[in-house]
Amino acid sequence: MITIKELEQLLFAAFPAANATPDDRIGLLVGDACAEVRGIALALDAKVPAIEAAAAKGCNALITHHPPFWFLPKAVLREGPVEGAAVYRAAELGVSLITMHTNLDCSPAAKRLLLEPAGFTYTEPLSLPCESTDDLNALGKTVHTPQALTATPELLPSLGQLGVPQDGEPVSLRQLVSRYKETFGAVAKVWGDPDKAINILACCSGGGGCLTYRVINTKADCYVTGEVAYHEALALNGAGIALIELGHDRSELPYRDYLYRALLDAGIDESMLCLLEPQTCWWQ
Image (cartoon, rainbow, N blue to C red; front, side):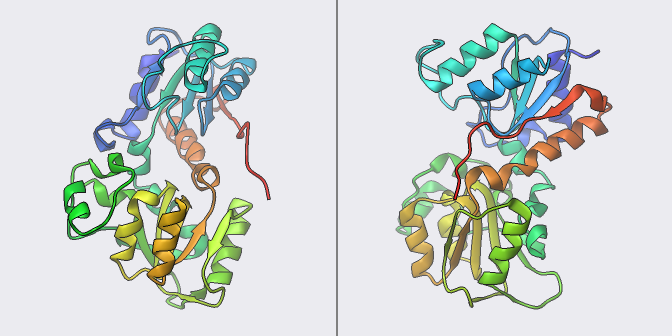
């Protein structure tokens, strides 16, 4: 048997805390560090339905990619705001909440997440000739999510990737969308000419809007991410770059499998592990 704290350390061994952006919420955020682990559920989000599903399956640890809160809840009430309600319910049911967020985004596996399903190979990280929010603003690039730009320079690029076709032949935007639909089950939005040839693909899982202007400053033909804001989509379109939005959730669901595999590799018995499907999801 291992404790909740030891479980957290196994995950940090696979996805080092030092790789997370400085203001991120990672690790054990709610729970009893000394409790023995009885079962481990893995999900994308630590919301009340996932916490209740974990408890129903006999799991007292819920590991997620997204943290249950970004800012500390102003109140922790069962019927209160969603972040506080999640903390309340987790404590009530004895389910410890552990998050692996941007440290997982920066892992070597993340380089393959959105490139390989499309038939593309990683070539280099996304980058700009400037590294600070002030530099971006000086270029007229308004940064609406600056937290993703506060990491050390060597970590910044790993939050996004560039790739080229594995066989060297460009694919049309239509073909690219078809490949993503086959792998992820659906695509939320597509912007651009269906016949546009894609030679260089930029990608970032989850909310990729903060890297919009990094993409524009590359030679990418298309940007694939979970979601961006409308004005960011228009900026990409104006720069002649196609955009595929997979949906924030769908673009990051494979992270559950990465966490699952990391725990198996660390010696956790498979009978202790349980993958949870999203409790809420958009539809087409």
